[in-house]
Image (cartoon, rainbow, N blue to C red; front, side, top):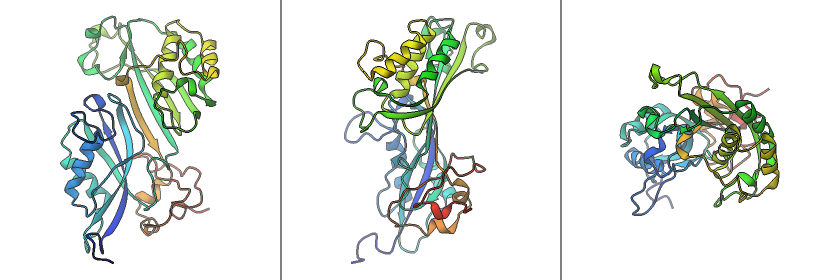
Length: 336
């Protein structure tokens, strides 16, 4: 006992936030084997090799995104096990080291936090928000500014019935069986989800659109928030709402589609293109104490799994903790 390469070394777990443009990747998840396709995770783990951890570093991704989908802020946890006598990296040093060794310019590590050893980036998340960008007034693909290509869904129509789209979105809010908006291949054991937000708003205008084009091109953002989503649920909900905006469906028909629980129906097989979708945020709880380096958090390494809450969005250091629960980070959260 104690003679292995990890003997005497200290394992530190971190939560890291990172962003990427998904155009060049086969999704966020690593692609293993000899395939030419590559995921964001491949580059992150390649950069982590330079940390010289005793045990190879693996990123456990909070939210998986498909090929072409972007992320303003995704999250993952990872373990770094330094050799005996070497202290754990500070979150700031870890962030800088990963960014220094990342070999793809479309990926950036935003921030890192030390978390307890039983923290899980996927299961501890309390909220995920996606936004989907639309552009109207674009009859041909070449009429979209080059800086906006692969960043939005360009629609030929000059007009969307925004009132009808917002009415249709109201039918999706709340707790429902979203099976009608789930694509095949979902690993989820249940298709019941609670959609907390489904909104449509005009963008103030793209800075990449020339003045002479600004009257023709308009940009819109759909935003969806839930604790978790089904496979391609956001893209399928987006396609349905766009159909409403174009007059192909009515808001009442969206309610009928939802209640049908039929993913193979005539209309719900539509899927919005991947390149208009952005993962906006993954939220946790208790960030303030973690960011302040609460010693109690660092001492929880190796504890058994519990019902835990985790830190919030990077840069949101003043956010109040959300529903702290027993176990996991309980001792790291402010006490009443």
